[in-house]
Amino acid sequence: MAEIPQLSDNKVFMAFTSYATIILLKMMIMSILTGFMRVTKKVFVNPEDALSFGKGENAKKFLRTDDRVERVRRAHLNDIENIVPFFAIGLLYSLSDPDFSTALWHFRIFVASRIYHSIAYLTPLPQPNRGIGFFIGCGVTFSMAFRLLKSTLYL
Amino acid sequence: MAEIPQLSDNKVFMAFTSYATIILLKMMIMSILTGFMRVTKKVFVNPEDALSFGKGENAKKFLRTDDRVERVRRAHLNDIENIVPFFAIGLLYSLSDPDFSTALWHFRIFVASRIYHSIAYLTPLPQPNRGIGFFIGCGVTFSMAFRLLKSTLYL
Amino acid sequence: MAEIPQLSDNKVFMAFTSYATIILLKMMIMSILTGFMRVTKKVFVNPEDALSFGKGENAKKFLRTDDRVERVRRAHLNDIENIVPFFAIGLLYSLSDPDFSTALWHFRIFVASRIYHSIAYLTPLPQPNRGIGFFIGCGVTFSMAFRLLKSTLYL
Image 1 (cartoon, each protein chain N blue to C red):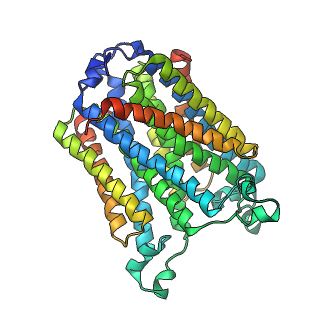
Image 2: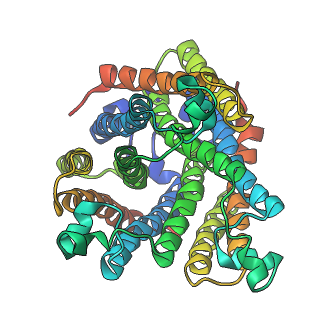
């Protein structure tokens, strides 16, 4: 770890801010997409949601599950499982004074791998497309974590 | 706060700390609430949990799902999907030197919208109450994200 | 931007970086473990995954749920519900100039309690082993949150 006179002078932190914001926005869009598909396909889990589309017995038929909606939900959950650790470890990594170019490539590869993962999940593309996206993303986060533990282990 | 004068002089960061802590505590309370409802309603998913309330066949009847418990779980999951991105983007936003009053209103509106969302989910209130809480919360996070990308884009 | 002259002189932040990285890695390993169990037990939820292990009707029989896989998934989800708030509140706490020794014990107890929770969930150990791990972890996070609210409340 080195001196960080101003966070705005910290190029790694600035780059992290941009990439993290982009991939977190992508994650939130999965949430909006789930809601959008529930409304357009009329597939609900809460009775009060179905009531907007019919009354009584008519509303109950919208309380169901749908393969497409479940797929978006699984893609969203996988994002949470992977993008949140990336953010947490990436933030600590950004503040540990890593090499700028190395850091930049970590962020770029992660963002690309997760966008590819979502495309592979939602299309869906045949395996191992989605698996490759998943493992590259994990690899980037593990790489930053190992760098952190190597350089700053303090227990 | 003492030895980090720069962060403790950062009013936006101090306000973010308070609001983020409050809404994260609210999220954790959903977790405690789920456990509390599982025990009081005797609704379990793990056999070892049900065993505390009966033996053999008697325990098996507690392995079931319950609408009220599932509702709390969905409210909790929705909190994770929204409060975690708020924390991540809000933290970066707090460190990007935004206008203090603007930042404060972002935090206040987000916290209020998520508390309203939980009340609407758990009561449950008729739609669009819950939907309004959800979209206002998303709007706050998107607004901070766009501000970040506009002011600090560095790819 | 906030000035943070030397994060590397902040012993609490350094310790937080190490403990947070370790417990986030543990959380990510649950994700890898779920995937590993899906492949070895041939239990899939996506048709394109099952296709790697058989064609047509032969593939469909792998689209099922399995108690062991669901148990790992629940342990993983519980990690997300608890480790993410620990990271968020712990990060803010680390930057609020707490007593070093007090902070260190918060981090140590949390990491130990979550590792114990995972062992109790996956073995599975009889209750209240898992419950104890869960509540100790919550207690640590609540303790840091209350300290933050007491020392920095700024609404």
